[in-house]
Length: 395
Image (cartoon, rainbow, N blue to C red; front, side, top):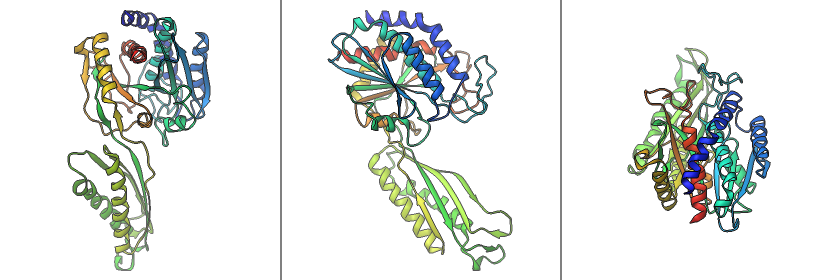
């Protein structure tokens, strides 16, 4: 069976893929700066004769593996390549050599798994029909998201995939397992930028000012009513302010205060209704207290919807490949992923691979300075991506 051959190939390529992961982890690059990473990936693809195109959306790569009857069906597999501005604290041989930059979200794992899947699929290309498109994507961590830019440059055309898969590390599941959730899975994410400008003055004479600090406080607390009173309570949404900046002394009311935040929602219609509520409340509140305000909420990543039929198929394939006990149901997450841009265009399935080691090693969350994985998870990642590729082309 093809599943058995994929499993054997994942074992065969494990040490090579682990070495690839170590190299990428030790040489992280920030969003849209993945030049060396892209060159490294290209060299690996060239070495095994996989045709590919570089320079898409700057550093992105698209590779094509054609099976028998390549025009039958195309399926896409995607991995992101960028790292985060975090100083790594792990004391490992493959520790980041780029001070202040770290693969703290596991994109080194995603890229390594996709390269491993590429090796497997290339070896087995005479045993499946259709075409597999491999997407190595820049800039998942930074707006506007590498996915949106690659789509604009035609990554989903020539050939157009009938489906797309992406994976992500998940330290809350044990290595050897995978997690899925059909339907709505992750939230949209929009950034909020508010600048309040008033009349500054002496703290002892607030009546002669338009107090930007107190107005900012009213906004931060009052805007929570948008979520608690305007949103449908059965549809999750979150409004959080992560930065407030203004003032220089205890006895001075500043002329300007800046507030930065994020709004997340699972429903796209409510998402944009909420934008209007946030803007209207902000403007009316500032005007009522004699201040001027500018507010910008640029649309960020959309909510991520896993195609139910495709995801159900993937759950069944994973059960056959790993055993049903190793296939878990995921909860809805209010985090965001630019993979969602792909799912607006074609049916998609975004799933998780467990990365924690029995005995609670490597359980630091993603986006922390001590995040790491049990590298046995690489076998699962590359095997599942290859399996989803070949099984989807059979549909």
